[in-house]
Image (cartoon, rainbow, N blue to C red; front, side):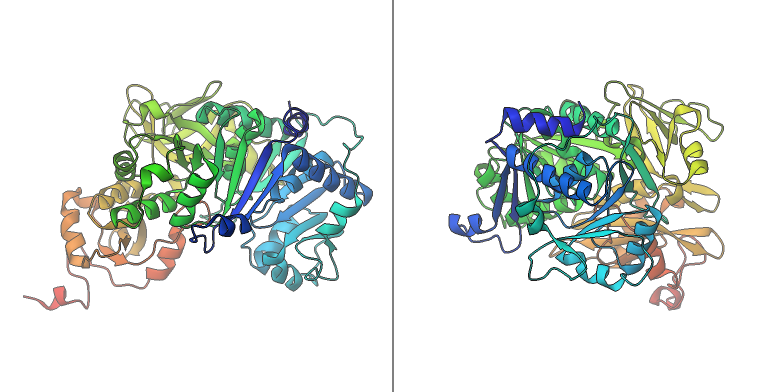
Length: 547
């Protein structure tokens, strides 16, 4: 069944049951029930399907249909998923956009994806109004917000809810291999690519995520990441398959997480690494009370989107021995998350991202395309049902990334003798220093074992002698204090060629899905002085002038 068919089925089988809950995280500290209810909205499966039908009817009435492209530029809200499904029901291709885009990024994405229509909210309104005079080719703007704030060039969403029919659109059935969605990759290393999904790709994600979560009808899934990103939405797709309830937490704070899990009886939570780190820091500082009671319903914490350090896994197991932990690996081109998954019963394999799910294959190859032996690094290749259809408007890039029927991920990995896979780093992030290939993730995991290190990012800086030098940015937990020299001394425990030449202190920049934005770190520190040789003094420092 396609995802639109599943929504229609759920509206029939579980019409009055809650499908979605949305809770605003900001200032969610008052323990009273009235304060909580003021920040809570909900939709039943029947209501969600009706709203999706109304969106579809609206677009069909203005000539948006099969072959049209509709952009969705909104923060997480209770309406986000009904709107997404409404676009699909019209036969149009849905194009989720990052609501944080500036004007230039928005124009690039709108033009490149050939959008015919755009839905936006109050947070995106100022950017959209800035770009109206630029040639965009958009025929329709739909505003997700109050009538009073709706710009003159847009339709207010309330008009749709009040005027459009609630019945199913009378259209020929959608075909599994028809284009359904275009997702822009996160683009941490350059201009993001536009990845095309078929309806079959979305349906396949439902089965894959249900397999990983062990999802049942009685579960309640907590989703916090932005829904424009493929991972968050496809993790939610398991709920669609089994008709389970989901909670969208709009924003993240540690107190709000504990409150929502307790209040909504959440059983499965998907958490990105930065949020896990915030939770662990709060627990270590004693800022959370009655943890066992607050999380008594939670059976599984699922994480991924970036490598999860073994030190974080160990801390989670110490704090939450009663809660299972699952780690998934995926990428937009593979059809989203979970194309490798470390299941809860294998979590003792520290640092692994697990095994392919049923129907999927993986292998690690060297530069000549030959499969590597166990423990030897190489590029990770994947093959499975219903990966991306293609890169939009980029035939050459599609042929390259899908050469030989395998998806070439660009990630460096290895496997152990039992076939479990370990991600070492991105091919594009390898630091080549003095002729040695250095994988930042190895050094990041080493630095995280230093007490008081909350987060770290390792990156390369241009070096006059070595080509590139290893540098590290460290974010310390509250109360922790180190000098650069102390951290460099600690790094004597690394092989000489992997030791950082410089250590900086400050926040580690991450994109909305938790990936470290290493280009920002490189730009920030590109003019910092570096030692000429490994272990040498930093020019201009007290080390250089000491005897």
